[in-house]
Length: 578
Image 1 (tube, rainbow, N blue to C red):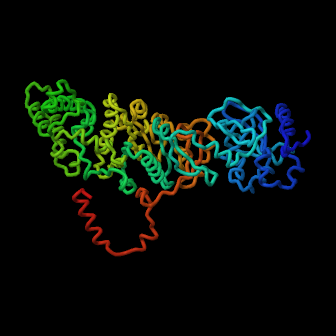
Image 2 (image 1 turned 60 degrees about the vertical axis):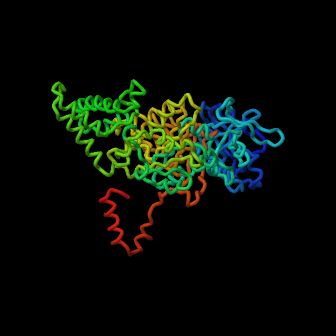
Image 3 (image 1 turned 45 degrees about the vertical axis):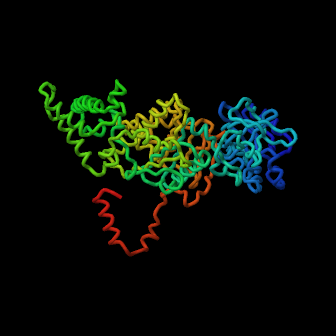
């Protein structure tokens, strides 16, 4: 077999290579081609670097000329300099247009006489037309309607090409960073597609996940200052980032009335028993709770209410009803279940840690006021509510998140006759609330968030999930996220889980997830035209969350004031208050 160069300016050699490929042979790169003088950098974009070997539905095997790749490495265009490398973009000539592909894998062709040939697997990303006069790509679109044939020439994708490919198609978008490997092409997210079909932000601890989440939310708030965003913040990180741009709520000012809970949430808080005893306690609580709600004048006005109806009631009324039921001779049970429920309610009412929810001041009908404040209706230029649940006792944290999440969903359902006002619910540390099946404890928060993931978009409720452990997240919930923003993941199980949730065309990008730098990510799905690798913008220090790692070497070098700090901490600890 004669050696055949793929370095020529015309496609004659490439056309011949198709015949060889069809016969099972792969052309080698000639010694003369490898020793030829390097062309000017401007020629690299116009000269092929390889050709197609075989084609399948989602991708292709291609042959690349190692000498041409080396020539491209010194090109001043960063996109051309990375041509052929894993994660880079290439363009394949198809008729009068171009097909864009991403390199997934590389290996050297070990066939005798084929030194200098690289065999690569590529994934097809989309296609565009070519302007006859300039040769530029335009009208780029996702998907493939016309496939290349073996032997089709392959060229580097230039920064000019990528600028056209990643250019906005006119839909409303927010820019969040720079497209890799370029220095100036802005990466945008299509807001309606991002929020309309939910999104997930995934990344290991220390990769800049919280800062990136804050960046995206700041950009959305700037675009829509009259928007409605509710963020569940389990660590109190985001209060600092949005102190001038949002409503900040924690146990000191949340004032969430206990009677907003539905029956399932009441059972989680008021019942301590398990097994058959829990069913008995549940029946008793349901009967007494409905009677307590009926005592409110609102119940008389409405007429027929259920145990789930958010009608205010007094805890003292509930306790009295429990006492009366316990005293009946025909109650069918011993007094023990009644006593269990009474003891728990009295414990919650008397514990100062639960005052944000079970205070005697929260018996008034403040439902409309609470919803307006938390959901930012109206926003008054502060479209985001940061709800810091770090001060909530751990026993009821999940229930508090469940109530807030359910209120978002129920409000969307019952306001369908009004003008639609979409709400974005963002959940940090989402794996705590919607865990995978193996860790699922059957809590109400997992059920409501799963329901929002499946049905929320029909009612104008968007879900944003942020987690460092995607493999601990319920698979069904992640699969409902139309856009996935994946930062570096160090755990192999997490990497495999994310790859399984990604579309086929993004697999090449995903292979680079372990190699991403801090504040870099892979974005794919509905929020972008095609999968992209993005370097996030730097966020001003005033807008960042309080999630920076402490500097041990610096802080351990300081001394002084420790005794008073311990005294103040012990005082707050004992008072269970910050």
